[in-house]
Amino acid sequence: MQQYPILPSNAEIDLMMHDLKCVLFPEVFGQMTDGDFFGQLISHIGSSLKASQSTSSAEPRLDADIVGSRFMARLTTIGALLRSDIDAVATNDPAVTSPLEVISCYPAFTAMLHYRVAHALHELGVPLLPRIITERAHSVTGIDIHPAAQIGASFGIDHGTGIVIGATSIIGTGVMIYQGVTLGAKHFSRDADGNMIDTPRHPIVEDHVTIYSNTSVLGRIRIGHDSVIGGNLWITHDVPPHSHVRQSRPIQHIGFIDGEGI
Image 1 (cartoon, rainbow, N blue to C red):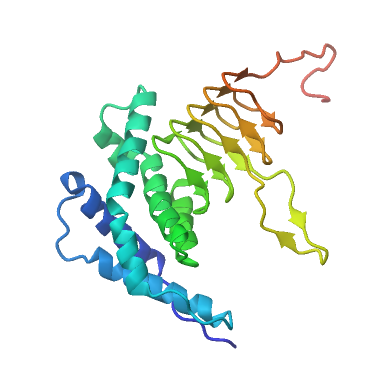
Image 2: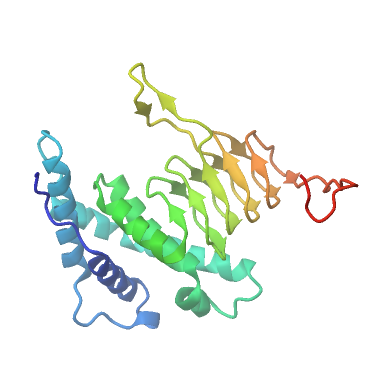
């Protein structure tokens, strides 16, 4: 049986992300004392590179120390994006009393912290580790964001459980989505041998769009800026800017009693 390098455990990912929170938000989580975020990051990048190399005959093209240093150079940008996400939630939810409540209580913060880190690592070409990080957040929050998705600043998530954002999704600035929203694929492309092809297949959501709960937006379609998409909808076509898309009125069927037919 083939032996693979040991990948980071859930506990190790949790520790690394906690230490990162201390780096980015010392006013909330305190100064990091006995942790070493950079050291953990380098170790986990190295493990992921070795594991990926063990499944491929290709020579390794990345160096963990170099990639780690490049990631650290992006840390200020990641922190700024996270603060914009926190502000978006606080601004759009009247139940929020302060940004501190978002940081300490809301699953949106956990999901976006993990996504922002994983996306940066994905852009730097790190294999495996970005998915490990976002899947850790998925298991904790119920929010499933692929690290390859492109999400702009001030991304607001309310409640969040059941949200799915696919790998080729593109989301603009100031977008707000609610629980149960899916940005998914309508179908998958295959080559002549029947193998799936990784092509753009998820929606493009332009700036300042709101998508309400349990709506599925499927395929490589475009939701125009400043639109509002109502709840419990199935959207498979382009939506022009400044649109309001709602359900039609419910249809009442006379004659059914006690649920004896649909």
